[in-house]
Length: 240
Image 1 (spheres, rainbow, N blue to C red):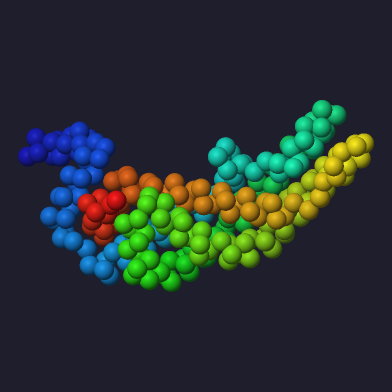
Image 2: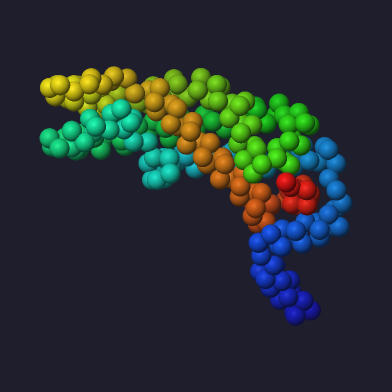
């Protein structure tokens, strides 16, 4: 008995990569059978709620944006020359305050993403579910981009604006733009930063959603319920 208990996890460790997924898929199909359309819908929706919820929670935490190099919000491209100029004339602290406050605003806004994703998931049709499950590895992310971007923007905009005001970003960026605009012969900056931060917050959110989607498609340990194992075992067997 002890040898059997030892052998099972050892076998799981030895089976790696695509062979692991294929073999586990076959085993899962044999154990549970092919999922019904209802099970596929429920399983995928369960997975997407977990993934989008995790993404929203991670990004809305302190430093969710600021400490994540992949999505950290920096000065807008048209203002990066201004940032360099400010740092060169001893205003580096002002530039640092701008960057920190932009990211804090995005973190505040990310709290409002979860209900938008949940609403989009509830509206999925059977065809949407099938296309996502058997589509490309970012099929769900692309679906969310199509169906939630406008609503996310509408939800994020007032939160971003209020947060920018609360954390001082409006003042810091306005001060930075004002200071830079006083430099002779430069192209003047628009001191309004809210639309830029809103779009960067949405972009960063989808980066994290894509990571979570890839995780559940490729990581066996992310399939934490029998339903997820059954549905994604079917995906492993039938994926493109």
